[in-house]
Image (tube, rainbow, N blue to C red):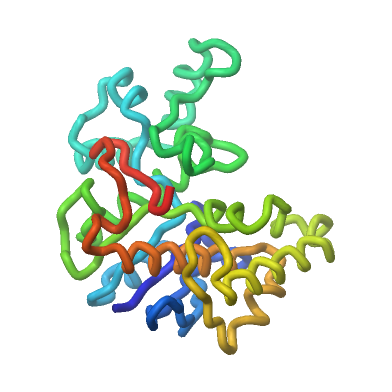
Length: 266
């Protein structure tokens, strides 16, 4: 079984691509076999159509909070809701969310999904720092278009399965120190050392998820990439491996709202 970790960006370019780690599970070890960077949505569309069997853990929110969906009167069926969102522009999406937030009290501006608390993730409504709403807007319609099975949310090709992932969930189980930045001035020796510590811990399997990493020839790249994109893709790959170990137990996921979705491992 091919196990992919996908670090997504809502604006792929030559400078920053959609990064994909691929590996296989050997016992309790995730053996990394490739690191790939795609620099356009067209390339990502083609990659999504690669034949299975494979399981991918994608670093982007798969849905919005039910509270928001119901308040806006959006479709309650997940696929129909995603198609509705795909028909909006980014500007329309931002204004819709801003209007929602402006009517709410300070400290409770954004609605959250049930999974955001235990995962420590941002509300999928956020359009800045990080712009996860734009990530959903750009990425999830492509998963639907490609005919993937988006686990529990949408039945598609059973040999190509998508799970929602959050690399910070794995990283924070090892350290709370910052390990990446897209800003050159913040790409410090301290962050380099933190990436090194994360990789070393993954190799030992001495952390909450317990999947060992065998990085092979990619070890240097995971540590030296100051943006953290390669490492984030690998961390998603670790979550894909953890989920595959639990494939007979709903990939380790709890019972959850089938409109909101859930982050694997949370």
